[in-house]
Length: 406
Image (cartoon, rainbow, N blue to C red; front, side):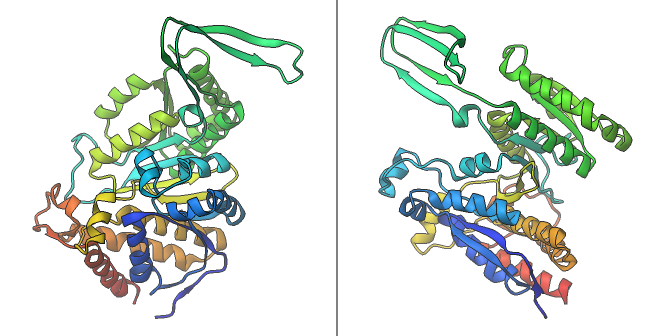
């Protein structure tokens, strides 16, 4: 079988622990036999981030801006325990956070649905896509541990330093406490809004957006106002022509509505809300390993990734020589999504057909009863579930692809 040729490289961002092992297996088993793969490789494993003082993450993000499409493996965001374990010089920031800040993108996450695994919420019949703002809020916050009694103040000084535009007391502390200052920009919020509206138009889905503007009358209300202004000026006619709806509500009301819904819409959330809700939605649909994730920047750059972590527990088993049954589906779909987009941008239809075949073979394998351990516990299909190792699962997929692409 002649391999599919590529003209422009993907930006390939390798990762950590068990997902790094899966990354290599996926390439060897289901990518390289069919595609003459061209990538610009960046090792975002924690060891190499330490060696480069995290410059490799910045370089990878800038390469993403250069080539337009990237695929990323799951990576470790170190805590105090990881600093000790890996002998780090400092607690490096989240690679995802760094990349999102450089691209100023929006993360869209949607569950991968298969017959035989029902969502926990029985009313959900179609995927719910979470659109997460990927800039600012608590992820770029400034924090301070208050040592004792004193007054905390919020101060804004204009660039000319001639006047203080805003100065108010935050709290009069009687004893120790904590402070946190968050920020966002109209430019980033506008990019977030346009990305959400355009994604809704592209996928022909309703768009919901939620904040808590009744409590946060400046911060959250700014999000609400910018979304409405951009919708009215740039997207209202497009939405009406497609018969889709833009809907705003409070975050607590949105949660109640989502639980009662049938799915099939995009739910746009601020950064922290999106972080939490995407995990809730993916788990309720079946598994964190069964969720697509793509970062879309307003200037048309794409970064596809697995929506879960590095599966540390399985990695320690792997190091002991034990077999593992780690679910690679989200990482498989990151590769298929990136290759499909690369083919779309470069006019290589064969890459799109390959991506479709890879996803279909993956779903067909699960629906035939062959799956990793995490899915066995949720399986409701008529065919008895057969638990296999990660490598056996990938080889089952490869056999189906060879037949489909022959």
